[in-house]
Length: 265
Image (tube, rainbow, N blue to C red; front, side):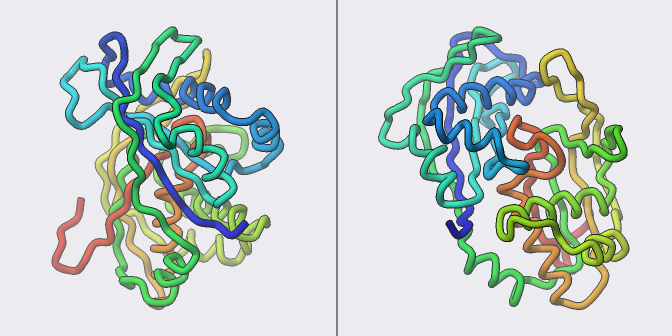
């Protein structure tokens, strides 16, 4: 099916207080809960894919106090088939509770809302007539990391950031690898110009994956069409996630194009 990027957000209330700084680490358990809600044959289909057609993450609800039990679980899909299978269980109030069996936490579903979506036409519009901004602020909302040459890199190296997005985009649209020359150009023409970051590990079972959160500003050199392509990748990345294990809760990003009058991060 043609890619259509969609998202839902669930506002959940836990049966016990939850420390805010540990909320993102619940991502792998939420992925497990999500798999239990899917049709078995579709869950098996997902396990066979090299790149998952969805991302999900969990963060503290903006209205929560320090140890309040409210969280936002955000699920984003990259094509119509994924949306039909993954978000369908949550429509119409069919799911009233989400149980994380391993940590033994139960959440009641307070509300479910659909967020903005992007169609293929929307992405094409960004590519052909985007803002042509040369600077973009990216907020890494959950721990982000990259796997390179057998080790983790927990730093927003432009080549790694945009290579990750190009790989995910190519998998969603073409089922193929991005052109290597284009990946090289992304690494040459995009600069990290400012940042406010903190190291933040992410727990997957007994493993602590080194990661980072915070904001970074990237400057893009090149023609307006190239800058539009970069913006399109970033807008796609708001749905796909950036870096490794975005289906487990890592690499959630939010993007802002910076106009000339705006200041750096």
